[in-house]
Amino acid sequence: MSTQSIDQRKGRDEANPFVKWLRNNRRVLTSAGFLAAMLIVFIFANPNVFTQFRTYRSVMIILPISIFMVVPLVFITTAGEIDLAFPAIIGLASYSFALIVDSGGNAFLGLIAALVTGALFGFLNGALVVNLGLSALVSTLGMNFLLRGLINILAQGYSRPVSEIRGTVLQQILTGNHIFGIPNQMFWALLFAVFGMFLYNYHKFGVHTHCIGDHPGSSKEMGINVNRTRIMLFVFSGIGAAIAGIFSVMINFVWYPTTGDAMLLPVLAGIFVGGTPTWGGIGTVIGGVFGVSIVSFIETGVIAAGLTGFYTQFVYGIIIISSLIGHRLNGDRIR
Amino acid sequence: MSENIIELKNVVKSFGNVNAVDGISMTIKRGEVVGLIGDNGAGKSTLIKVLSGVHKPDGGEIYLRGQRVNNWNSARSRLSGIETVYQDRALAVQQSITRNIFMGREIVNRFGFVDTSKQYQEANRLMREIGFTSKVFDPDSPVATLSGGERQGVAIARALYFDADLIILDEPTTALSLTETNKVFSFIENVKARGRSILFIGHNIYHVYDIAERFIVLDRGRVILTLDKKDTPSAEYLIETMHDIARSGHTTSEVKA
Image 1 (cartoon, each protein chain N blue to C red):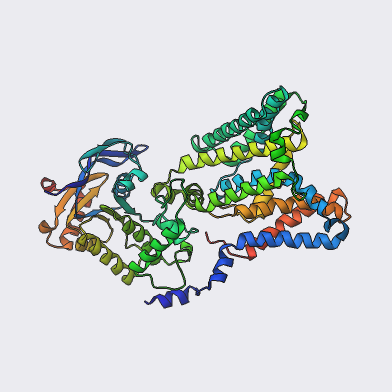
Image 2: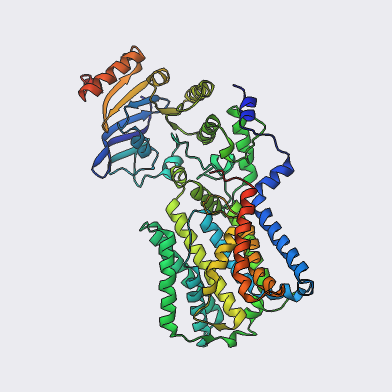
């Protein structure tokens, strides 16, 4: 039996480098194409709004919060897990930041407190899933209720204005100085995404994440510390949530007891619209950035196109489902 | 007397009430090819998973080159020069061939970033060494695009690359074509010639007889017979002995063990 005959039988053919590149990046390219196509439709629907830079700038003010969150969530999804507790961790971590700043504490101290809070509750999520063997879907859902409830009990429904942060060095660096009219937070978010992309594709942590999501048994047999990596993934998600929470407070100059709550479904949708599938083992960080961008532009687009706000969810649904169909048509699931 | 690569003393591994490995003692010496045989449920797979570190033993001792080891696990087993080609190949099929070869032992810099070009080159070299000639896949291709024999090749390339002192092959010829089976045999000859040890697990007694110099027969979690090849006139003799064991549950030749 020659190798040639195996190839013919399996319908395999030799690919040139460009085709190979397209094939290896088809998921991120599909989501980029989807974003471009959607923007073109919006431009035709309302040229006045979508040819103006301020439309894009207004989206870029809050889009970074979703980017900080979607990057670790792509990792978690690739490992075959899910984290539904991130909205409450965003709320809780930013609460500890707001508390320290509002009581006259140092903003850097607040920042560290928020990161520690995020990492700690991420670790708790990981321990429940890994050490006690709970389902990630159900236990993080429960954790989301638990921590949001904790926030409500602690804050008693009151918001915390943190206007004293406005104009400080930290605020200027993170969310100030609009370079070319682009808010600073957008640069930080993109930097975070590029860091995440390298971590995901080229670092041992990211490579192990892929292997675990692909086949946990094989990963264990090959000596990957599956449990430790899984816990670290939830810690990473908690840290992402803390950063998202800090930026949310730095952008709004007020902490609400509901901070992060509205992000659950749009950010989750962003993961999958961006090209990371639910079954684990593969995914794309940059695709996730395109995914949350698509979701963020929908609302602006729907209103600008002259439809009322009643249409927003309807259009969300159409775009999420058609993008999944797009990813499916563009390549078969191989596992 | 050549050095012991690994020695088990009275090792026990249970799952619930079942003692899958029930007090096994055995040694594998440097350069030795040992055949591990036994019926389904004899404890072969559990035993090799203890050797490779997937299962922590519940009792007994493991000695590596004469040194007692504690906290035995897969990573430790691989670092001490034991590579295992599992029956299920232990592959992650959506990942590239390169990623699979280096899974768990990536070539990294001190910040943990993978040297992808080094890994690619090494994978490319290994693939040619074990006779992958197809032009339709390269080290970047996902393992899912490979045939069964090709996948086995990836699993073997992994064992080859790390130049292990002991290679454990769990049913390496299952579901392979004749040509592919011959490739596995020539790989074993190659490893043997380099003075490495092999533990070969197989259902096909003829294969095991041809390859191994010593046979360990398991039954219900225990070693019931150890035979040197010079005391085993033929594969038929081996099969006959195993039938006796299956009928009676024990053997009369235990004195040999």
